[in-house]
Amino acid sequence: MEKLRMCVACKQMQDKRNLLRIVKNKENQIFIDNTGKANGRGAYICKNEECLEKLKKQKALNRTFKCEISSLIYDEIEKVIHGQN
Image (cartoon, rainbow, N blue to C red; front, side):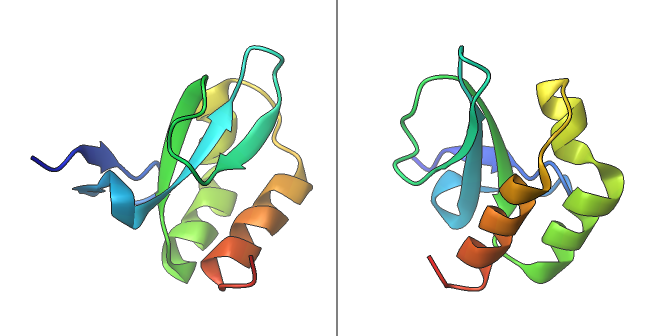
């Protein structure tokens, strides 16, 4: 059975394998989880430009992780979405 997760930007439910997972661990480090198994609070985003723009505009990660998100994190997400990583 597929595991559905909600994109924090568009709120659509999708199979978690089709989404990008961003994690905040106990040390308050925020990073992209390519394995899908890293410990910590996870947030998912669709791998498309529209959701990336919504994510930035709505500051959805800031709300999800209850902290200020560095622009470097958004840059990393953008690289992955554009296939540069």
